[in-house]
Image (tube, rainbow, N blue to C red; front, side, top):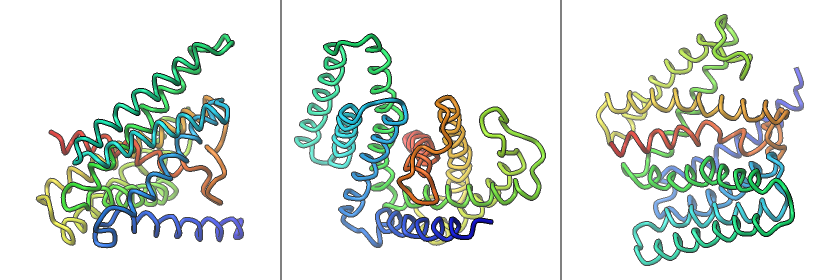
Length: 268
């Protein structure tokens, strides 16, 4: 075992958890300004990382990150109608200018560049923007709960899969993921959902159970989607920004898909 790498991974993981808990738990951030600052930075980092690993240059990555940030700020300011209209208009203009910029460049892969930009906005910018809705609904505990349940799911899916795993889920995408690990993770997520109901309330117990199931399933999908993307590009990690953990996208892949699924669930 590489104890040095394990130590670095533990320290950086603890710091990241502390920052995310502080930013998402309403008791610690009643106004939401810490959430705004932390998730604005994360939105920029994740977008730039996604664009870079898909072959974008520094300028293109920077422009895409600014578009993502504007969309995130638009959703954060949703209760200020005048501000949201201005931010949404700014986002539309920036996105349009970037697409026009691709048309004016002298290269043959304009379609690939435009597709990369729009994919990044759909895959990264929109989910992060709508994390605002989870942060500010149900007394502000839903986004915090998503992170907690994802951590529980990842941890116990790994442990259960390591001890009992025999049947592969999608071996060509993620050789180590097993159905035993998947169900083991979900079982502990349901236990976590019960504890969240006990401490925070906000929904009925059966609703928390449904939330747990949705987060477990779609969090796993998020992990598999990023694994497939990295496999198609031919890389192991999305980056090296977080020592011992890889890149920003490696740490938020499950949350991205789970948060969108949970937003849809809450909406309906």
